[in-house]
Length: 517
Image 1 (tube, helix red, strand yellow):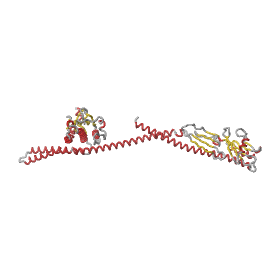
Image 2 (image 1 turned 135 degrees about the vertical axis):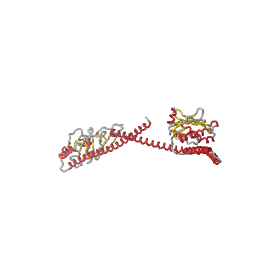
Image 3 (image 1 turned 30 degrees about the horizontal axis):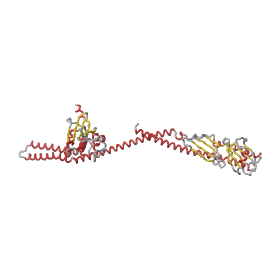
Image 4 (image 1 turned 180 degrees about the vertical axis):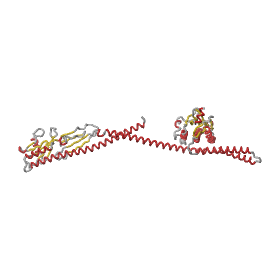
């Protein structure tokens, strides 16, 4: 698996994990808000129901305090309360003194409530109008609401209302999954609970709500908790959608980044090529300055010859008996010399021009001779010998002549720089052409010290140079110019010493036919 694919998969996994965490967080906040709203609603409902108990006790006390009070009226009101409020399971009227006619209960005295003596003892310790809660000791989930009546009600001293705490929380209603309700008496003992408690040490967060009921007479503590399930925090559809969307996002991002990198690299390549083109032109112009003396020497010869022959022709024309054949010979020679001077200037103009490459069928032997003529003066000034070994088969290649001349000229200059400080017998450069094995070659070799083996693999790297003041762009430029015509350039050390740079160029169609013949 490639590094790019591995990186994309890692990015997708990381983004998916982050997105899933965000989804879980959002769902948890939503569930928490929903839980708190439900818990507050339930707390308000239970508090309202507890307040109703106070209202019923107040109504019963008012019956006893009325001028026409009677036990029958009290009993009928109590039975009506029991009938309409099933959670109230019993109502007792207690007298501290033995007044049988003013004590009653709506149920049989059983073990699900304190005895009459206990109730009398509890109520007698209360102040007038005070109400307290007494939880059942047998775990039935019921509690007793005991209220001490004012002293004006002499026949009945206290009222006791028994409430089934389970019915305060709607036992028939379904609880959401993972929710638990619990009601605690003022001492902290649990009266009743619904739902299973959360498992200890679970990884899922637990939502909790805890608050006393709003009733002053019944300060019961309502505790609600809920453990969200994994499916609530991370629905399978949401997980699949997140994974798909992050995957699409990674693919799109990879595509955009790849296109952006490709565009940047294309821009860099174009900038580099443009820079190389400018550098090549600058190198040609700089080379012209170095070759100025040689070019002047080359032009001086034909111009001097034209001048001398013209003067001779002029004397012949002014002689008493001019010979037309001799004058024609002089003019023919002048024409040839003028053409030679024109060729020199044309070659110089083409070499300096910054025009694009113009591939044409070119004789490599002629190309090498042109370079030799251009560099001859500079090499003679440095006392460097130049040898030409040209293939008699006249190899041809379809190239831009000026570009390949520039490459050969650059290789000759590099060789000259490498051997200039050596003894005279080692200052020799050889340019050879070859025509074999389906390709043509131009080799530039010297008799110097060669190239260090560690530098050979890096010679054509941009900005790599072994010269103190070099820029490291000459050989990379040569390589690009050669490759533009389907060729290549190589470097090696010669067994006898020195270095050789070889330009490999493909044969032209004519060259292939000649090779076949």
